[in-house]
Image 1 (cartoon, rainbow over the protein chains, first blue to last red):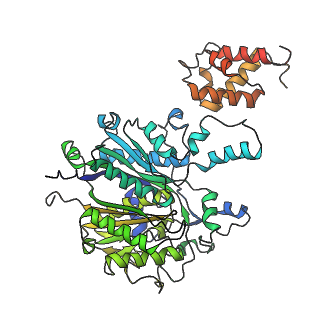
Image 2 (image 1 turned 120 degrees about the horizontal axis):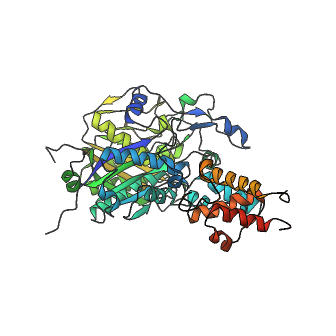
Image 3 (image 1 turned 120 degrees about the vertical axis):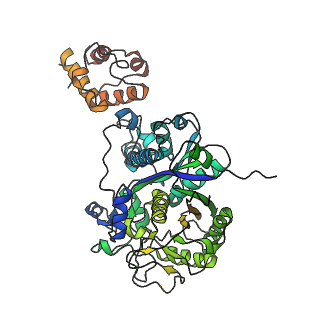
Length: 417
Length: 86
């Protein structure tokens, strides 16, 4: 007889986002169609940079109880992640728990890059000035690829496994997915999962050189426009999102709040092109997620799209979604409100999608006035929020390198469970 | 620029580095303050102490010299011995 895999639930979640750093503020923004996209004068200073648009986190201050020694190795990307994680652990009731620090808890977390200013310190000293003077011991730790996961481990005294999920725009979703699989495999009982990113001009630059940024610089509130015929590219955002995943029986024994169940995770690679999305690979990852969850496509009540508002991305994603799920499932993109938060997006979008499911409504895609005729026919939520009594939601993300993820969550209902 | 520094002036600069690099309250910094027990510095901080002292005084400390530091006075004495003409 095959022993069933342990069930995995979310017992805490939080984010620091361009829309706010608590669900009440974020939900008010979504309900009122408030965009966080802003004109960034700093970007005027870079020759060749076409975009001036960014979705920054404007309300973050390092909390006073974050002492120098606990934060000296952290750039902004790690600080945002630490705060989101502290809030999520607080909701889960785990901040003072023995299981947090006895090896029971691990971390699965990533960002597209380490902290860019620390990388700049190294590049300026070694490459430009040919000196090591001025480089501090913690500069490398701030920009190393697994800086966020490593810093979170130090900050919260984690002794379990650390899985850095540094895969650009799927860093956060892989963070959640690999945390889910780690608990299913019985390797850890609790996982801190998510992703983060810190805004820096190099991130707008990397998309700007590929002609992928929005350049409607005088109309920040009208972009990005995922799936719209008038779209002209993405806007870079920043933030951090953390989900606390926990084995169901462990959560029940300690009386933890159960916010939803993680039902399935699929991840794969297109293996075709390093930056262009591939409809086949995207469709396959959605199939993998559904198969892992053990559900039919029709069981999904809402899909949170990656929806970056790039031409190739939107078209391929919409077609892949229709190929597998059909055209009847409501879908929307939160990037229309807070831009593309890169390593954070999978986690922030999962957090917000789960919260919307718990409240029975879903936000429309902002600025989606006329669906691009090359995008597949789908039930795009437009104009105003839609009330849906959803039991199962899907959140999809796609990254450079052809990496795809699909996460599936189920509303927690102790009676049916 | 360092030729005329006296002991008090060196202590003043060391204090500046400690305050700026490690957010230490200047009132807590004395010649007999222990860098680990009183000022809460560790091995990573020692490296940044060397970076800060170099920026403030132009003097490089060797690894062994850094390891020999126990109290603030040790830093002051090290810098004094390395001043030009010392």
